[in-house]
Length: 235
Image 1: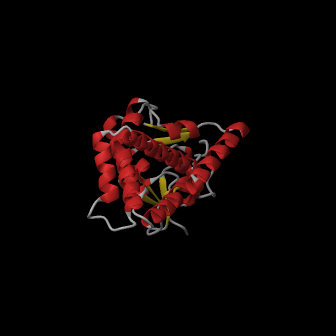
Image 2: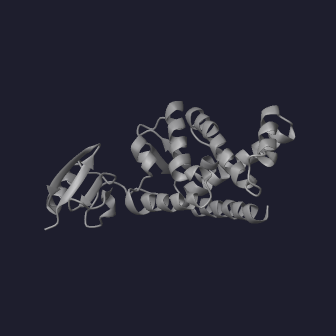
Image 3: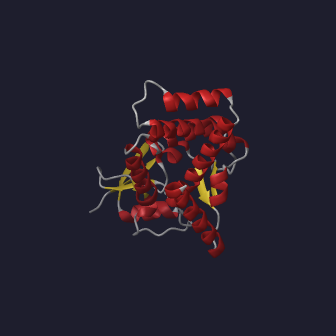
């Protein structure tokens, strides 16, 4: 007989039979996002991953690619902002750019990688400010991605800073070449196939939602993504 266990906060409960799990679902004690596992040493997965259980709640919608493209658009706009500031000869920005391009400590050929890592790091305070004060970023607004507390309120500046840092560290591997591809792949699996949330959003109890889609919105998203891909390879 299969034994089931579930986790609430840091507490673990079980073993239960499948029928007992269904009763807990009906009672509202186990929800779609509750961590559930088969057997004592099984992998913790979001309960809705297990298709043998029925739910009264609406299915959790996760769209990893939209989130990725929203972040890429934000990063691209950050690059544009830095270029504008550099063209205006802003002292601090110009000094940093010169250090990156001509710094004696850099290995030749690594300038672009170092620049990308610095841009990702520099995006943290700007994103945090936008999420806490405006409630969104340009990329998230265009792709219809919302980041909120469970009660619908905007994140505080402290929450937004912590989340942005965790995304930078866990999700993007601080921009380190090759490594960030691995963290992207792991993040996709966690979001789509396992927890139905990223580890940082689950840890911080942050809710990420997406606006209702339509044919025209999907077509617009496709055109924006096509433009970003074109810019990346040919811009």
